[in-house]
Length: 558
Figure 1 (cartoon, rainbow, N blue to C red):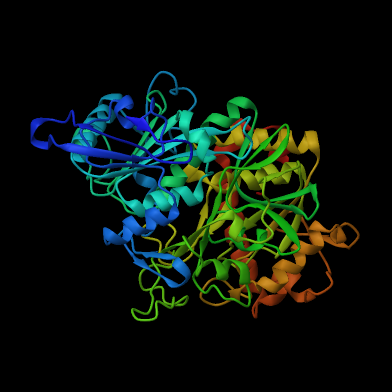
Figure 2 (figure 1 turned 90 degrees about the vertical axis):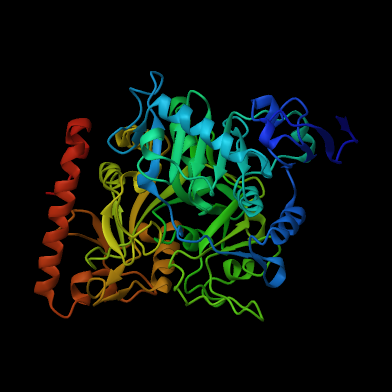
């Protein structure tokens, strides 16, 4: 192998070490640490391997392979087949001695080491002779807590996607890049549940001992980034760092004034954090260390259903920018114009774009300790107020509860909003028990101080099907008032059902909206719905009572 100079490709050819049926001359191209090729990881016998191609080359290759089509402005348009959302039930963690006592097994399906070894061997056999794309990337904007991740993908556009979503090292840093973990993604591979100790032909398997994640049987690109998020969710608490499924921003020119927005997909994390009056740190996944807040990612993954240039101009603009990945959107075959209202493929249509496509995005992706913590919920019952102020104990209660609605399309089989409790506002990505994250959050709040808010972006005036979605204009006005400190001087009432404080009047927001009971045509129907939701909260939280302190227990809704 010869390295042709800094900034140029390392290219070499060699005879494959694959079995006879696949033996051929193959080429490896792109920039890579010559001591850390796939062969050095004992992954042999593949076809052409492309290391760390940049966006133009990835798009060119994906187009040649008919993986998608070129959209306006150089966006890449792709459909992912029957999998248009995550498959959380197909996610497994390998049970080994090193993780046996720390994994939350009630929430994470186990896989035996033997099942994983068989899965790995069969996947490598499946890969023989085929071309693959490698991206060497970083998870975490704070280098003190970042991990190096190697993504090996069967699809060129998956390489483009993950290159967009994770953080891209300097080209010169690739020359000595060594991965902490390796992810291999083969959508065309189908698992054997009996042989591989998994649930179905689709599999996401995490092995912390072998420092490897295997993904098979799904083209949905979000599995790539969520696997890395889950990985960081396990590793960071050991360092006293709070991993968070949240977006984050800070006051322009003042990183100390940082706000984080917890919430599942569809609750408004991306939309509400992309405030033109503040600096965006990131839209989905962050850590809270002793130094402050840091983004895990280098890009954003925004839902595009009903996206408009009027309401969200910057996100809308990314859909016609070079290298943005457009996932599962209907478009005109001739003009390539996107249809933001047609959800016939999925309601989970998305665009993935680099962070710097948002004009007010932070170049460092770092912020201070959160001054405001916003917990976003999408209440399909139409019961919760648009904003409420929480005590620290109430904040931990609602964090552990994680009440929201799964929005249509986010997961397989979800076709309309489903009320759910997703602890820590991200249960599918939490490998440790919820109390680990809840206690970390409470410790951080106690140490650094933060005002906590519960914000409902769901329904008002009735439940889903009867009421209407909370006006985004009102939500933005309430958030602005909270972040600017204007809600510190207004009058509050104590909610009779949930015990938190609700502002009585806020400038620019109709008073009636702040009292959800008044928005219903039938107040008695509201009372019945509220009683039903209170009972659901109480029943759900019973599982945490043995693990929490008295002050949180006192804040529990009953």
